[in-house]
Image (cartoon, rainbow, N blue to C red; front, side, top):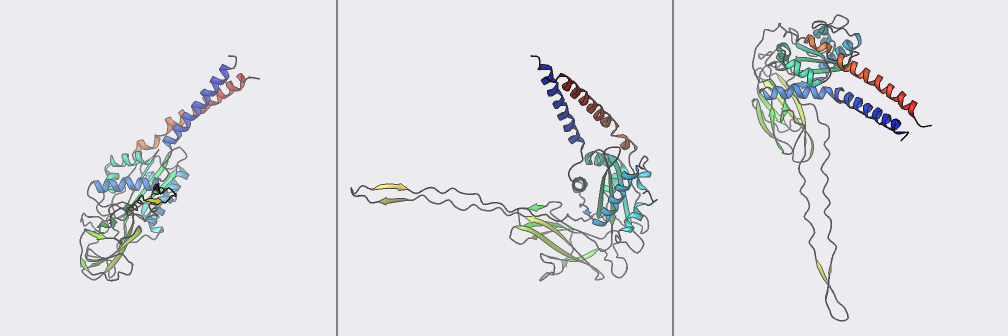
Length: 367
């Protein structure tokens, strides 16, 4: 009985540490915030009849560099401040450094930024804010880039850059699905609506014809009338499948795109072996029925899904905008900045409490 306080205090200390650790996991960033945020954005677009955005490496580089910059400097206390880099750069400057494609008149870009504990909260607040929501549901953007960086004050800086560039008309296989169990899929084709008449001698306008192929050389592919959606048949074998599309406009200008998906064809189990009986002769001429061992059916392993490429997007709404007028950049809701103070204080007090309990444990430990 003399040692009861020691064991009790030790149990309380370990229980409290476990609670703090679980709380930290709840507020921690998801393993892949970029994928999570892109999925949230694209699911919202699909639900509203829009085609998803394609994740672009150059826009992602611009967004990530800005997220790192804001996290390092801490200069994001106002809505406008979060869009300006420490070197005075805007989203147009940062994207231009990546050599992202431009029309003859310039680039069409937008940007969302936020400081929150997780992607769910950031996305929810963006959807409640008209400028942010307009970028997420924009009819002319075709690509996005996402940057994420941990903030010194807690939580994360999230940056999403939106854009469109000439001769890049991404498309989707089965929307944003990464795999399929059927060889027949649906393609959602890209379109050029920022400059539907084309731009110069080589930048395609609205396509009127297309070729589709399961090989990059388009062997045997025939030109057919352009349509926004079309069914297509994949090769009948399991594994990663890539589909290629070539667009052509009224002036003969072309652009190509590709997208991939994993085909998982269900494997039909082999039929089980039939039981047989054999007659073994004996000196007494009595027939003995000996049953052969029954084989055990081993399930045939399913093929492993290989990584697939990021889905691509198409914008079905045809809205022609003035060539030189960029979309207004969405800004951060001011309330987002101070969303971590309470949890940080609670965490600090919790660790102080743990230290006090451990000191008590040491004092009451049996000698």
